[in-house]
Length: 314
Image 1 (cartoon, rainbow, N blue to C red):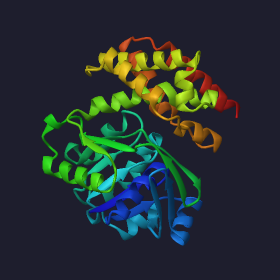
Image 2: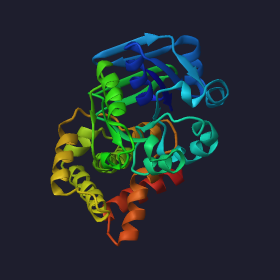
Image 3: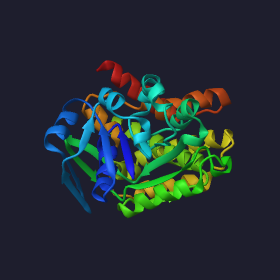
Image 4: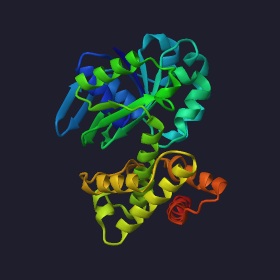
């Protein structure tokens, strides 16, 4: 199959390398020194159960729009930061609308799929999550990754929409699994996205404040309770929006993060490298929803406020 990796950072390059090594055609869209390194030296990926070092086809956005058509690909994997989605859609709208290739979002947050759907339609929008994976650019052209690196995906907002053919989803699922990517098709991907948001809201901003990895943070005698409360606040917003998420989901996701090997969150990495944080796409969207629904989210507000102030001071 033919895959396009949009936002070829740590996560995107890991999945792209897996697919390429399995024999699929992969084009990576990146920028800056990371792009130049991939073009000149190839891509190197180090993972506890996977190693990749090979030449790759890497382009910037301008070259993509000039030299490729959306019909050149079977699936577009959207892997860039959530705060970049709207601007990217504006720039690439005409290119995207020149074909019917589906887009699979592997981004944080719950706002990306609606933005994609508004441009390309429901039949081309797939929701997805990259679960239990840590992946970062160690140096230009060099990726370090860890964890089982699962993909859960499905028709947006759920399979009852009937607009995404089942055989199409199954073909992508088979390609992922044959490439060594544990994957699962979900009939209710919106629920899965909110469960992932529970994790992200609980550990991403707090890890940036404390500089602790996910397991240390979750099992800490003081911060562990905050992680749990942040999950409860996310679940309360989800339930108020009509999603079947409750206390059992909180318990499951809390146990998952406590027992999973500690990883450095993407937000902590971005903070250390001086890059913009996905704070609004994770905690900010919960605060907006909480205000609209008249649901208090005091811990989310505190962590959001502290981290926002920290960013302003720097």
